[in-house]
Length: 216
Length: 193
Image: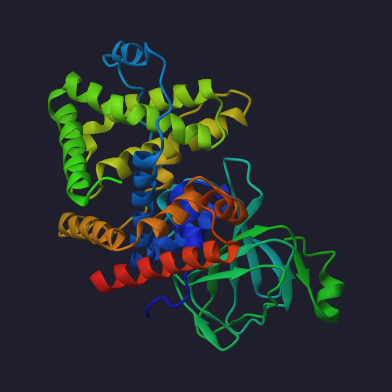
């Protein structure tokens, strides 16, 4: 099934410009693995970056700048980054970007009936926490809002939300103004990569009872 | 603003210079590229918040990386300026991380963070060539005004109000121009695919 839900153009532009927070970079990169349309939009933004370079008024380099670099041209390059075997095999987590599969993953932990969470430990400081969320078929997630931006990319399975279907590769953005109550579709577990800024706010009585225990 | 022909010639020249470095370690070609790009990379770094000294250092490092990676440059999949931009961008992110790690130097991972794993297909080279042309052709259909707001907003990270002031246009125009530019680009890219 084709991908229906995409990141905003601004997010893809910020990705190409290299100004996204690392956790959000991970979420967008995950969507890009699935979506050729957004990949070409993002690449076109890199071209805009190229045109920025060529259109900026030049800032004079010091007079010996070229000579200093020329003196270094024969230096051997630093060894290229050693490729570390992904800690998480592809079979276990479908289609995450390669660089993410090299990160350290925490253990799956139970957070609610048929809902499990597996933290991804980012190697760089980030305002955004990244984790995998696995929910059993038919799970109705608690109604919630966020105190910051939450990005979700479906990896396998599917959920529905407000009458829309979200399958593998689909991207969802939540913020403090959006009330979410996704329902996992029947048939199989739904695994999502989530990049979450701020805290989750659960609604309803059950949510208020659980809130102290569910610190996502 | 350079005429389209002028811009095309420049593009081809830069691509040719990078190839000359990649295939023959051509130092004269490197000097020409350096003369054009180093001061512009420095300006870009300064606008991204680097001090003058840091910006100069990052421009130097970017050009050194251009020399070392020139053999990997594929004109069919990337334009020369876009390619140099991505190297500069990655080094800027890397420098930022190092600063925030109290000077601990580690091997950079930034480059692979921008490699989106396309499943390798036999016709991937052809696809890359088509995508490069598509991107160029779509961008050439946007107006200079439209490109400018995109540049200012995302690459120079200016707030909309600041852009309005710089360009002497109302805030609402900045927002609508930005939105139009992005959606036009989306449409053009999908029409061309």
